[in-house]
Length: 406
Ligand code: ADP
Image (cartoon, rainbow, N blue to C red; front, top):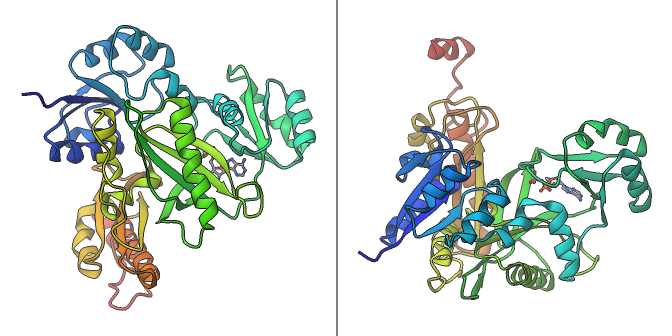
């Protein structure tokens, strides 16, 4: 039995969605999960343990052939110990630090000649004010580590607001990142896979709409993007993957800036499959989870050709409907073209619990694909069709809802 075992640190939906891709290839996955009820536990064998504990990581690594990640929060010092002990980490700590620390990431982009917003490292309110005056207000202040989904990001309109950030300077970071508030036309994401042998495979650059700091809607490829911008963004992702020694999937989040530089600036990096790549599960020959599995095993990468003119991915967050499955018949009957994905998570308001992909075979099908993705996601989130839709069922009234809760 030479099929390898991949260990995934972290049991969120990304680990969960690696499981079917691995299984299809006969590869086994083992997950180091944060708890017995996290998303991946019903998809792959899990051991429950604390990823911040070195001994736990060592024990876990001893049971697998390669270790990869569902998130970027494993302490870098632990990863260095594991690496020194010969553990096969993909990506390794040298690469991962640029996804863990936004200050290091900004430095790396400057070094590699990639377009950054104006930025500075600031350790005090006075330094923040000086940097804001130099860059020009408004500015965006970020914690270098630990942020996600917009947590760890503050927009400051003026020097007066800098005073309100004393709490962040007390968090214990050596410095915070302050950067120009970019006047972007939309957000883009460029994904590339890279193997330890150094081969790469790029996906088309996508448009990603963020709502309240959370990825909401992705269209692949980004409609109407200037082909030169798309090409330069793809190349930037490859430059980062090669320059930083990334292995597995890399997502480069970008701001589109028409007419400024190559038409984009780098926002941040993720070294794992990424929400902006979920479309590829149904819209590309090789989905990002299979590609990640191939990459970390140093297998030849799969084709990234698309299966339609566009693919739309709509996330659904926790809403009124607590029994997601009860809405599946309505959603699936209304939108047979929709590919529904659910993460096996309990419903909490605002929590990412699933997504819907719809492929638009032809360019003129894009609007219909978006409507189908949004329509199916809304039914699952709300438990019923929108009131103004033809054939919609009346929403349960308050009385019924209270009955249900009991
Ligand atoms: P997170 O690590 O939480 O994903 P990001 O750095 O991606 O944080 O920032 C979250 C969101 O804040 C971005 O998607 C973007 O909408 C906005 N944002 C971040 N940096 C800037 C910036 N320099 N200029 C304008 N908007 C920004």
